[in-house]
Image 1 (cartoon, rainbow, N blue to C red):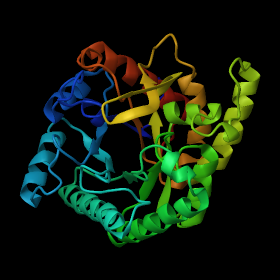
Image 2 (cartoon, one colour):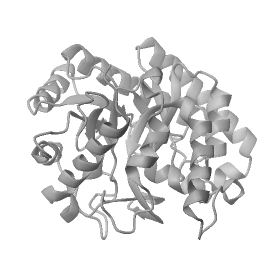
Image 3 (cartoon, helix red, strand yellow):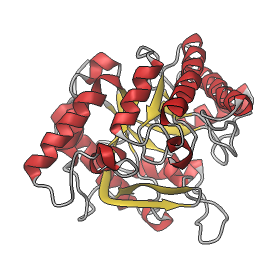
Length: 345
């Protein structure tokens, strides 16, 4: 393995929450403490994860927690030798926020969720457990049907909300990254995502979060067939030509990066239906050469302020998440990504 110290390697905590719950057929959430234990248990050739990325909502975090309660969480995380990197703002309806393309009341809630995230970020920064990373958002408008009724008008609404959110973040010394995911209206294809980023027009404060599983579905045109760059049955040569075309458009905006695998299926659980399906790192049905594909996104990464990368594996069954070998395989592929594409300072 290369000895590149950067990027730092993080594991996400939200796979213990996303798609989990007490509804019919749902599995229960996995606690923050257990997710930390599983992450800390991963080891490959003496190397371990450097930190975690973290979702700011219950049951892992009360968004209204006091500063002293948040410092206790920071102590818990630091006790495992981990840093906190990127934070996920609780922007969705049912958490603190609401849709970014809704009425004034909804958009006010969205902005309040960004303020909440910035406050918590400030506590973690002051504590010392967080030294890098961004705050992640999306449109909090699930599905594209409503957006399609007025694409230009709705993108303009989201852009206006995002601009206000970016001003809040800038006042707190933070940057926002919009998650490229086929289920979020206005962010559901590579072209619509690019149009939105350009409409916001604040690249120093609001950029793009690339997730390898989700951006694979961008290529295939799920939820936006008119923007498909590949057709089923593509050759390897066609794949990498399309991949390079897509990444070249989005990489200049990319300030947060998720290593992930995808089998080309659309999947969901609970409130997160019809989303990109994450697969285990070694899934035989995986469509991506993770190490090679990561290189397209990580080219010039230090210039964009990237200091860490994170694994994302939402929608895994609890039995998979509770298996230590799952995390060893993930850490192994992330170490290979760093060996191939990392940097020293």
